[in-house]
Every structure is written in C-alpha cells, then in structure tokens.
Length: 112
Length: 114
Image (cartoon, rainbow over all chains, first blue to last red):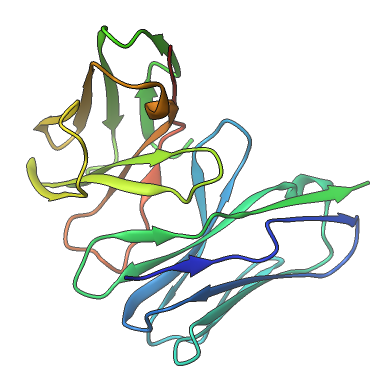
C-alpha cells in the first residue's frame, strides 16, 4: 500500500529564505507526482506535476525534483514571501489506478 | 478560481438528517472525484466517476451515496452520519483518460455533524 510522508509537519521561517520541502513515498510504481498548495478553508491548487519519466519541473520561484528510484521528491521555494504561507501537499498517482495518494501536508509560515 | 464550484460551503447537520453536497465543473472534464479531508489525516479519495459511471469506491460507508447525473455535476447524498464524518469534503475533476493531467479542486464543503 502506497504511503506518502512529508516531514516536518510545520515550518516557520523569516521572509527571504530559500526553502526545501521534502516528500517520500514507499512504492516507486507511480505515474506522476504532484505538489499542491492549500490555503486555509480552501481547496487545493496544483503547483507542479512531474511525470514519472521526468526529473524536475519549474514554475517561477518553484522547482520540484523527483527521484523515483529512491522514492523522494523535493519542492524548492526560492526567496520565500509571506504570500507563500499555506499548507503544501505532495501526492502521487499510483500506477494502474486513478488514485491520488496524499501526504498529510506541511504547514508553512513565512514571517515578514 | 479553478472552474470547480461546490455548494454549500458550510453545512451543519444532525445525525438523523439527510442532506446533499453539490459539485459543478465548467471545464469540459469527464472524470470527477470526491475526497474527504479530516483533521490530522491525509486527504482520502472516496469515489471516482468517469463519463458518469462510478469506477472507484474506496470502501466508503453506505451512509455516503454519490450521484453523477452528467459529466458536469456530482452529488454526495448524506444520511444518518456520525460525528466522525465531520470534515472538509472536496470535489475535483480531470479530463478522462488523462492520468498525466492534474486534478482541479473545488473550494470544499465544511461539514459538521452534531
């Protein structure tokens, strides 16, 4: 059974820091891995999607990498801003299924 | 805005009530999903519909009854719920067959069962 882990559960940093968010998964047979952002009381917004054949994806200040063989992904946020404060969730689409399996998320607070 | 809307946004119900959650998408997608997000637990998939047909039921109790009358609308009918069913219920959609595509999520319905 696929399990997705995000550690730590929460992180508080001053504005301007470069951040690394970690995600690990137990079964490497995935179609893709996605990073989402969730603001309080709201739904999820997709940030980056990495196909199983890809190593990384970039969007603005965000860069996500995927190492399928080791079951790890990293979301890098450059020059963090207070507006980046949210919960970040990592999820994988399991091979042979439509199921998105989520981690519990990491709550990020960027202080001005 | 993601193009996926959910109503109501908040719902309080007693254990003997019957209520329904509604999801609507205007993205032309043919796959729709219900998820449950409880405090301190990962988001859990409940149901998947492809072209109005249910293709996945993730061992959800029968007190939750989904309905998909067309590709744009998805309902979740609730009856005789328990307090532990209190959670944020999220709807999502995706182009059918596009496992490589992301899912688009609605804002959710915050459900409280008294």
